[in-house]
Image 1 (cartoon, rainbow, N blue to C red):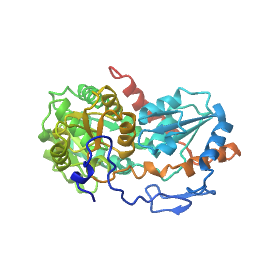
Image 2: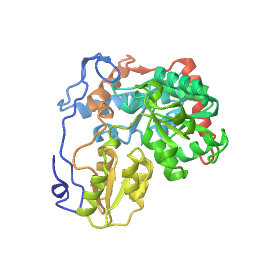
Image 3: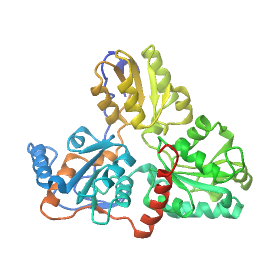
Image 4: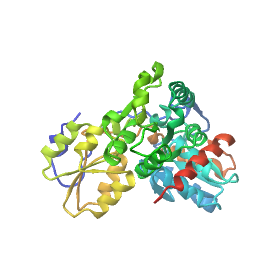
Length: 404
């Protein structure tokens, strides 16, 4: 591990943090992975000198039949072949706006591809180049656990005054649960609007109604406290691994925000010490973090916002200004490259890739595209019809929110 002083030896430009091991799923079986999958077919070797040319040839052969989506956290070798880049919901909406595309190649993670399948037509086929590209946060809320948690709320007598709100970073089954229980989906950009709407369904922010927020506790807490003016005491954390969620009946009755015990493995790494160290090393630095970070980190930062917010802030920043950004490294590296006139630093001193997102690499993308060129459908993502219906209900509710 490098120290911040080493990391910031030169204050201009972007300094790479120290590398750390990253295990990527290749060919074969990995039943212990996030989604427990098998990867069939012959993946090209990452060292294949013709890999980029093969990707270009396959993309050209597919033409308008395919639409390639690249999430901001993807590596550059994948982004180079994306027709559109963006956050998860933007990409799903972009896919829905391309009804002429037969194939949607989603270079993201599993829940994102599910959202694309929900929002696109039955004639379109969504492909995830590596089925093991899951999301640790989304996997922290299994549908069986959430249904059991709702039963606890019913037993305590608060389910009727509770509205579920699920973050976009959740499985289709969790989105469907939310739709069945008259809730909504939110993104990191519209979480405040979604929570205000949810509380309005049960008496308003000043009332006694509750929100069950899934699956990221930090986004829920930060939005409730910093945007809605609630206190930390209004928030409790429901742990699905403990009886009654680890809470007393009174704690559940008194709470306004019932937060699921989930978090992002990337944003959860950042600490107040990181903020303190960067401020000492770079006088006048602007610290900007994602709202999936812990509350104490968000409170210590100067700017807090979604991925799109972070990009726009850097676009508008003054030349020569210094920024320390707390989000996924691929994105920080990319915005630093796009703004050589600004001093961009990574908030942590070590690498923090989204390891599951990075399972989508160029060999997997080439394999998926070449398979489609040859007439073989691989790694298609299909959401159960009933889940798709109710998840669409929750997504449509989000789209109907003010200002969306």
